[in-house]
Length: 144
Image (cartoon, rainbow, N blue to C red; front, side, top):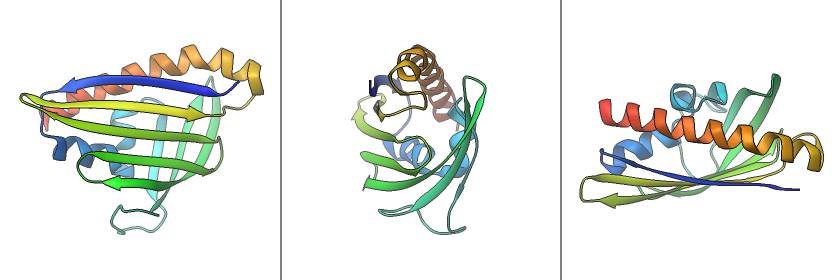
């Protein structure tokens, strides 16, 4: 059973500010509750198509490490990554400017460890984490 999560949030901040938060690997631990550490594969390299990052986090107490690659990059409206090592997860962000800020839509798809049983068990947990992450993104975006 594949993982398929979708969520959105409205943030009172310009799309450019939110895009910078979403695509900078070093800022992931600030707002993504699933991520403990993240760094660019090539320090100092600008984020662009093909950029890679190493991400470490926990899922249900298990440490998971992955390497991701940017597969969609259209500032400040679209950002997408896919895991090339570790849990096979794809993440897609669509940012839509609004009169009072930005609407952020996130899709997370892929596979989690443990097959169908793991996906069923993890989906509810991951849905809560995605919601919490977007709330953190909103708080940081509106305060920066």
